Image 1 (cartoon, helix red, strand yellow):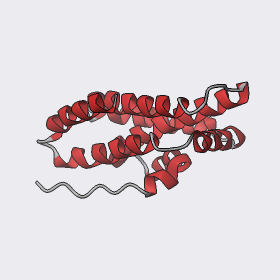
Image 2 (cartoon, one colour; image 1 turned 180 degrees about the vertical axis):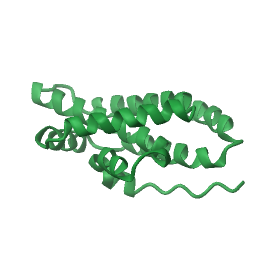
Image 3 (tube, one colour; image 1 turned 135 degrees about the vertical axis):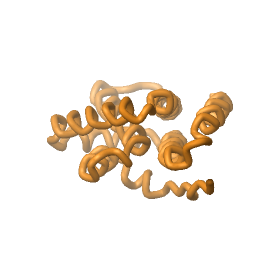
Image 4 (spheres, one colour; image 1 turned 60 degrees about the vertical axis):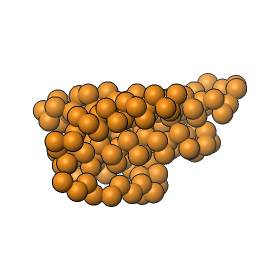
Length: 155
C-alpha cells in the first residue's frame, strides 16, 4: 500500500521539479499525511471529539472553500488529489487498529478524518491563504504538524 504511494509521490515530485516554490508545501503536506499513518486510533478519536465539542463549523467551512479556490486558481488539483489519497490511506491504517466501533467513535473519527484532509490541503495551498484560515484548519493537528521538518528545496 505505501510502496504505491511512494511511487505516486515520486511522480508528483517530478511534476513539481520545475517549481521549487510549489514543491516545499507539497513535501510538507505529504510528510503530514505520512505522519498521520503513525497516529494511534485514540489520538484520532480525541481530535474528532474535540472538533465535535467546539463551535466554528461554519467558519471552518468558509476557510475550506478558500482552500478549494486556491487549489483551483494555482493549478494544484493533481497534488490535492494525491494528498487526499494519502490521507485516506493513513486513515485506513488507523481504522485497522480497531475491530468494533461505537456510533460515537465513528462520528468522532469521521470528524478527525475530515479535519486531516482539510489540514493536508491547507498545507499544500497555505501560501495563497490568509494566515488566520491556515491556523484554523491546521489547529486540530498542530502537534503533528509541529513534528514535521522538510528541508528547503535547492533550485
